[in-house]
Image (tube, rainbow, N blue to C red; front, side, top):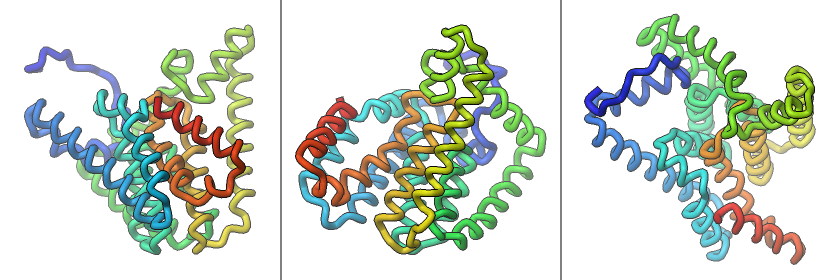
Length: 292
């Protein structure tokens, strides 16, 4: 109110745990809270980049420089910082979950996935990927942190808040299907079908079919995965994060920050060295375009 902002009656757009975790920012003055929020997210971004680089000790200086060039110029990241969004936190949690599997720290993965699920629910797809990779015990461990967070938020906010969030999730994506900034596959199909005079139900059927096909492809890609093989984990989490973004019914530009993880895994791995000159050139041009 001191800033002249009008209170809004909009429902909560995040799960209850997220609002519980950001309470320290709520008790600070606005400007101090904004500064601490930006600085804390810069630390999370730096930590995510360092974690990725340290897991690839054989990466060349050119590969590391390419990653830094991408991070510094990545437009969704710049937009996220300008708007004060939470997608860097999502990137960090996904990175820690991947790191936990790579370094055999199952509780880190379980806790990170539990918090991630309570921040952006559609990233629960990473739990499915973890299961496909053969880490069933990690998925079972998730029950403890997930149960604890549910108990804490129920005691703090009460059941009505949780029910209201569920109703928001069910209605929110339908309200923004024709919004120009919604970049999701579902919104793209909806806009195209409606423009051609077809019903939105046809678009939703195609979206559901494509989502089912994507999940089947994920299952096939990891059907013979060896749980301890690093490249399998890298590929699984890279595809899982990308699939979660594609399956989301509501995607804005700044939501693409999390794609820095699969981009980093691809850029730092030895995959580029095995590419032909034409593919390596196309890969380099793609990175430049992403950072432009």
